[in-house]
Length: 329
Image (tube, rainbow, N blue to C red; front, top):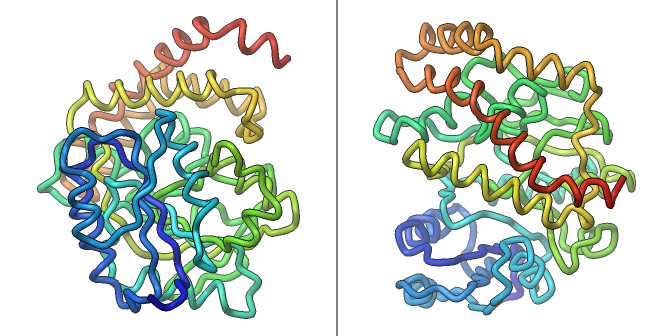
């Protein structure tokens, strides 16, 4: 194998229903497979996950820490590529040029720190909950109203953070973030320099995307290319699974709160405003109707339900973890 240009890090745990589609999408990329290193960091899968990984000649590492961000850190430690691409097993790269364009931009003279796609692929074949996430560009209604999301909604007209925009190119938005304007960039096809991550971020023992991106921005690595391309994200098929994943994510946030540096940097007035919009339900209904006019899909109308109920889930978990918060403050 030639020295890899890109190391793709994929944490797994019983991902047989997703992983093959993810790896197939990597193989279909318009980029030499000889220059790609696929690293599967597995957390003790008991299904066919590892068999699938071997079929695609992936390098397999074993974690055992039962923590997806710890698995990513393990992958970073052994990655040989100049660039790191982070995707979860339930992600598919739907455009064959995502890797080649990302590498081209990172090697350009634009001093780009990271590259990420800004759309989730929308398909009426997907479940209503997945279509909700794709239409709004969120897996949690709070970032939608706090204006902290890194994925575009089908309600948007162009780039959603105009103050960060340097230039609108045909294939991507060139943007510059500060700690105050940084949205939630994540693991949906995010590529960055391995050397920069290892030198300027606290990637051990846990690699939290939001935190490490904030650390890069604070270190002056603040220019990003947001590709006008899609990735397919099989996030949650049912309402129950949607709440279950949100519940898990919130619990993990509090459990590892002492490691976190990204705090959303939200003014109290903005938070209260977002909360009022969600709880009164009027704005979510208006937004759902606006969306339905654009794309006739009843999945838009899951938004009032999630907007009203999710704050109570936040409140419940915050109360459970009140002592953890008091230790930090």
